[in-house]
Amino acid sequence: DLTRADDLLEVNKVFGRADKVAAQSLMAKAYLTVASSKEHNVYRYTEMRREPQIMYDSAAYWAGKVVRDYRDSYDFDTDLRAIYDVDKPTGPEHIFIMPIDRSGTQEGNDKRRTELIHRDIYDASGNPIVPNQVKGYFSSKYVDPDFIGERTSARPYLIRFSDIALVYAEAAGPEEGLAYVNRIRERAGVTPLPSGMTTDEFRKAVIKE
Image (cartoon, rainbow, N blue to C red; front, side):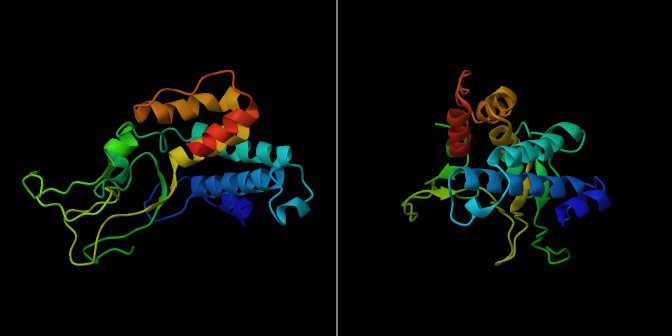
């Protein structure tokens, strides 16, 4: 199905629609799932005939096209918070996101912790609300301050450029993939992964990412 979709679709960045890049992204994720699952003896995947490395190579091929061939339409977003901004549904990282709209007229120590995970709440003027009734931490991803009742314009992403960059890194290994992982870590304000890791060490690090 995805091979056929790749043949039929064009690069057409419209939020809420899947285009050629979305099809290639899904292929990369499918191949990576097969490769990793068979390599680690996951039930039923061991019955597949193709060897894991062939599947890793296929995942790297399709993810590589996504991260290299369409940089005028898809790329890393330099602003971490903009990725989840409800008013920026066509950002460079958004390969495929859900079309949701509050108006009803449309269907549909790491910055990642310090900027996106919180336990305090604030009023409209930015002052902390005391006492705080929130128990524990919560995510500020997909926050829509102008929501109407239960209706929101927060659009959960289904495929992101960073997601496919990590697919490529895991499939291709450290020599080709290290730079992509470190772009993501640099944006998050954390130290880069070191060079010289084995493929197995590197893949484990990518999975943690």
